[in-house]
Image (cartoon, rainbow, N blue to C red; front, top):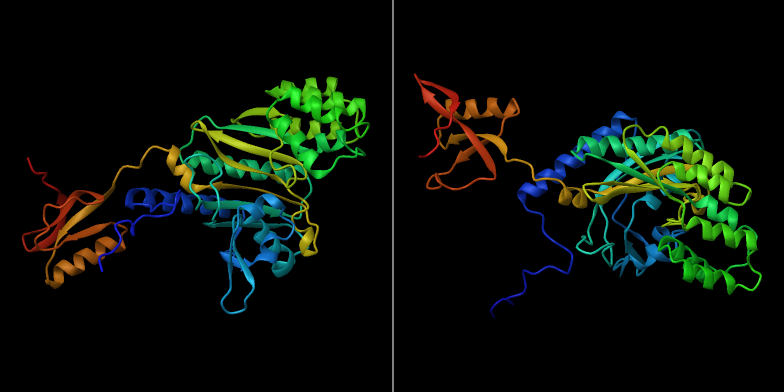
Length: 392
């Protein structure tokens, strides 16, 4: 029976990665892991598959909807394919390492999404992330941002920009208000979309569930975006709710310490508000959002340890998509042969870090994924490397 003509096709937004791009991704993976190690981060490798209740404990509805589920043929229990690695790393910190002091952990591996996060994105990101546990101060927030920025600069991204916000501002404005979870989600969506009409409709429909000061504070957030000057303006127009002043001062401190990166502030953009517990940030470059992170002190609470935690993650596949292609790697072309001297010469070159491609008989004119700019040739009875003579 002939094979189906579509048997080679992959699911929507799932793709093979071909040699040149795969090499670029692998180089970036090594670069980010080496950069994290230079900061003192230790590599961990959580499993791709876990019992669903363990994988989703405390993560909220959004991650549940992004998670593929299947039945374990051995136990009959429902398993999940991870859609985010951060909860797994929190479990490792809480239960397996169980350290009392600071723990710096990093990871890099695939995650799977039931739906892509944005148009043209993959449903199989290669997620790199770094998390620091055990320190509640701003120093940890700053370290996470600096590590992300250094890795992106080393990857070749220029003109980086960091956007910041703090979920504690809106939480302080709404402290004591009677708002159910669906309405709270709609309020956050209206704030993120800068939809003043929708925000007014939502807050006035609460029938006293929210104070007039809080209502005016939410309205003011719609205009509080721009550079660091926004924070000074926010101190003037936001009501003096407990925690607001401290959050604004924290943002000012971070904005003054991130170095050469351009800083943007958008106090109404609180994506992931149910996940983050403090400052959240996103890093942009090459016209795209490349990394996101922030403080999520509650992430380990469901595992029995409410540890301070802050970190970030990014998709290496998305990063490669916005970077210029790498040139082909230089290589040495060698003839195929059985001579011991030839084999020894090839072995020495490879031990020195060179790429040596042996031309198999009958394939002398095939195109390679490498730029063979030199060749191994025999002269005066000795094998040596010389410039490759290009065909005219």
